[in-house]
Length: 260
Image (cartoon, rainbow, N blue to C red; front, top):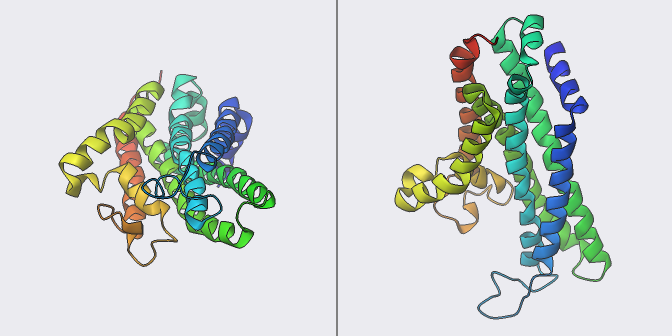
């Protein structure tokens, strides 16, 4: 627990953590505003641009919370690779020679960090939701219902995505490479695999996170009508498995190499 406390103190005392939280708040605020006030009409475009104040409209607004997953991933990667980049890993290992414990402490601390990222995103979205309700667009009960459908899944996915980021950083060690691989797999490789081999693509990190995002709305296993996604609990276990397996692989391979 002392090691976890030390990792949390590192989060509080480095500028990159606060920068990520600021970026999270800015992106969620910007996306909610853009999505909320995008052009809309009835008819064919109703699904893409729902009428203001409707249930689908609030659901569309709160979809901006998913940006917190990417930033939670980056947070987890920085937690592991930042020490190698800035050469602070040497005193860390001197204080705790058992490197496996260092990795476990970073997994736990990053899980809490991912939760904080999701909470910041959720708070910004909720403030925006109340502001539009106060402006006479929709009602608070409809807004809160949709928020409760979206936020729990995003919170769970952000926590596990941060764990996945630590595992990726433990295996690769290089900060730039880990970020490029983490974001590149989700943004570029996954859509291709999903299109070509959907039975395999549905188990990739971004896809299982998308399934987990709908943990509340999809408790009945319907996955919000997206048939290629796994069930939300399967997505959660798969995403947790990615983080643990990668972290274990890193602890037994790359992290055993000499630091200096």
